Structure formats: structure tokens, C-alpha cells
Image 1 (cartoon, rainbow, N blue to C red):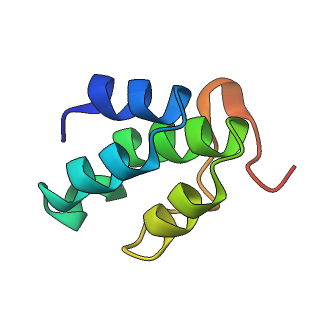
Image 2: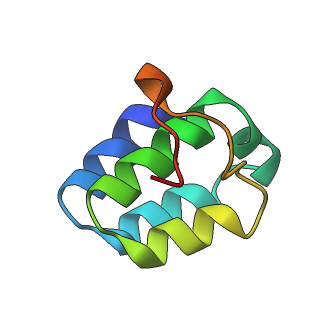
Length: 73
């Protein structure tokens, strides 16, 4: 997964590009730190469709975000 372009697309609200980039890679790449970082960025940016697209293939929604932030809060 190429995280910088994904994060940039999330930041500018370009959901279509996010979805296209996610479709280009295997869902297994979303299970690690990059998936959690992308989930946090999408949540902070209030990109709810992207959040759901990340959770469906298995991004761990209980894994702490950067700085130890509890994602539930």
C-alpha cells in the first residue's frame, strides 16, 4: 500500500481516489500500522464512507492510533 497518496486523498476529501487506490492493493495490507494510520486520518477528516471501506476488509478498529489514542474516544 502506498500510504502517502492515500493520506493526501483523504485530507482533500477525494473519496473516489481513495477507493481506487485501495482497490489496487490487497486488503491484507490494511491489517497493520498503515491501515490504522489511514483509518485515523479518515476518522479525523470525517470521511465516513472511507472509514466504512477500511473497516469492512479488516482494519482493527480497537488498535490504538498514533500517540496511544483510543479509537473509541
